[in-house]
Amino acid sequence: MEVVLVFGNPYADDDNLAIEIAQDLKIDGVDFKILQNPDDILNYKKNERLFILDVLRNVDDFILVKDYKKLEERKIFSVKDFDLGFFLDLIKKTGKLKETIIIGIPEDGDKFLLKQKIKDVMESFK
Image (cartoon, rainbow, N blue to C red):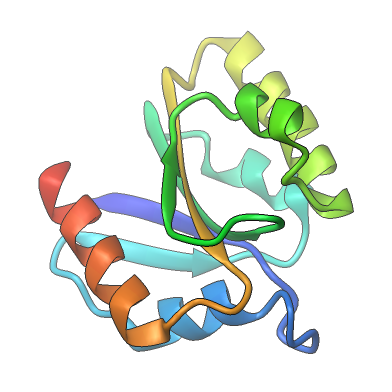
């Protein structure tokens, strides 16, 4: 079972799309967990591969990022995402996390198309 950790703010129109998609999307073998705080990620260190679904700033389309440090370089993190990077670093240092894959979506993306792309990506990792 793959776990996708979902971040966002359900009350902010520019940061709730990942939550809406995760609530609608059903994929066999994939469990979407909606998290409220970046430090909640410490509770999900049991998998060697970690998927994160989040709205990214300044992106026009769906992106798949395997090196979250590159997001900092492109300045597409929000304030909460800087905290997320901190907690990802902590988990990596323990050696319990081998791979992090961020599924980044634009804040105003087409929900139907994004759901299909996310489904395709998750199917490819089975």
